[in-house]
Image (cartoon, helix red, strand yellow):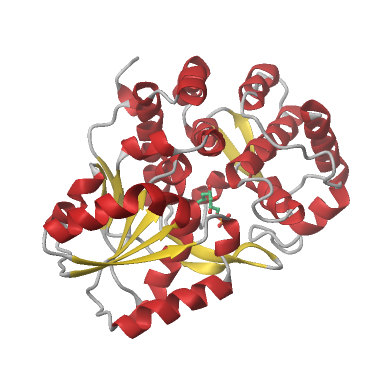
Length: 369
Ligand SMILES: O=C(O)C(=O)C[C@@H](O)[C@H](O)[C@H](O)COP(=O)(O)O
């Protein structure tokens, strides 16, 4: 494998408020990293979910205690339904009586849901306490832990309530991937491949060569270079456009469909990464119809087709179209899609007709039937 973006030396995210590191660590060493970052105990809050707690709560608590810290662990139910106002309210009810101080670090230990929910709690508790993400899912490692998007869902749509709140660090222990169920590997690889589509043909080539090792064998040697490359791309995009005034919107490749699919199917029925995989197939189809010469549709679609997705034959286009109208990227009533001129050359399209979008969805439904 060539050096380059697949093996960047050091990773960090340069934002207005701070430049924060992405470090590859052992979970047992987290307290030492917090000290090194200037975040001191003795108290620390850890927000996690039941699945992750079953594997990592005890070792992490022991490691903190051995280092003289007092961890308060809050466990939420797993899954997208925890990104709710009710769950957030319960978190406040649990955390505020503890008498936390503005310097008390909050660590999120888990995947995208825990990071988004816990991140939003950290952003709002006492008007903001230090946040450190400990992403344990592939999706959180390659995407959601970086860039400061936090928030919850609303019955009207996905991620409609939230804030930008940058963490102090992202501490990644790749070994945590080994306890993930197979579906979570697909979930994460969808977002990693997305980064390749918008920014890095080399990552697409790499994924084509290694997807069987990654999804089939959960081979960390094959996985970690893809994780690093995806993190590097994400960090660069965020550094260039922290508040999504321009190119950060490219990270939404596949997401106009994905958010609608998740909403219409019912949150958690189709996992976020699975919905992104389906949404990318639709976006790729739309892109290819506009510029057939620049995109090898069959090759790229074949890569996406290797990401298994649930049956979506029951999702009517009318319902998806209606949900897309509530997407955050909708402007002046026009639904916007991130499309590709070529791999690594994305753009935002605001002129897709309803008929063309329907044809793209028909294609996805037929190819996944
Ligand atoms: O960090 C970003 O910016 C992204 O768009 C990353 C997406 O993969 C992620 O799903 C994000 O949560 C979507 O954010 P939204 O603003 O479109 O809700």
